[in-house]
Length: 76
Image (cartoon, rainbow, N blue to C red; front, side, top):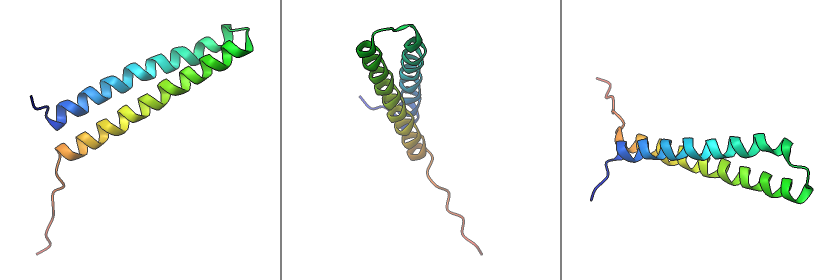
């Protein structure tokens, strides 16, 4: 099975969006946590999902870049 570069870019952006949703949920729930150890773990969880979202964005951008070859303009 072959996945095109455009489809890979689309899946990467969807993956990044889902990961970013988990990260935002993690960061917004930090105010409700009173235990310091639990808050530290939740912060690490949120940063991990933020990292995964970044990986998804970079992967999507690279796939999109590979799908659209650079048009070479020749002068004259």
